[in-house]
Structure formats: structure tokens, C-alpha cells
Length: 139
Image (cartoon, rainbow, N blue to C red; front, side):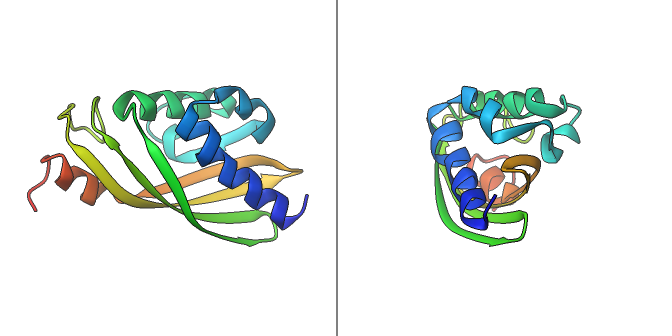
């Protein structure tokens, strides 16, 4: 697959899967052995099931989640996604119980592809900003 095709799948991961909960697209976007490395380290499932669990967790914690891809940088089989997350904190998020407060932060993800499908996903969210916004950490 081309770099542009990989970038398009990475963009759609946020715009369609995260924003609209279209988990069925994971069957197309994620390889059978795809690894959501960020969520797996938290003791969750591997493969597509891990991606689905990550999506469900996020959409439970922030049901009105909206992500905006602000930039994509790609080389060979990797895409770096710079993105913004906004929404209302309605469930456990990074150890903080629901507060009903708005969050607005940035994240960076590294997405690795093989044959047009995601084989590894790692996200670095701005947890400190989010935890400050929900009052779990002093400003």
C-alpha cells in the first residue's frame, strides 16, 4: 500500500471509528494480529479485540468524544498522527472517576501498517492536561 493510503486509513480511524463508533471498520483497518500496544500494556486483549476494547473504553469515558486529526506525517510503513480530543468526562479516565467536566487535549499516535492494515498502534495522550481539566491533578 502507498503512504497516502496508509495516511487515509489512519485519518479514518479517528474520523469514523472513534468519532462515530464504527467498530465494524476495525475488521478492514486492523490486521488479525494487530497490536494496540498502548491498551495491551494496561492488561487488555490483543488483536482486533484489543482495539475494540480500547474504543469501547474511550467512548464510555467520553461518550461525546470528538477527535480532530491536525497533522499526519508518514514514511514507509508508519504514520504519525497528531490529533485533538474533546468531550465530556462521563466515565473512568486515566484513573479519574467521572466528573462531567469538558476535556480538550492533544495526542500523538504512531501507527504501523503491513499490507494496508494496522499492525501496531501506540498513542501518547496528554494525560497531564486531561487530568488537570477534570480536577484529578492540581494545576
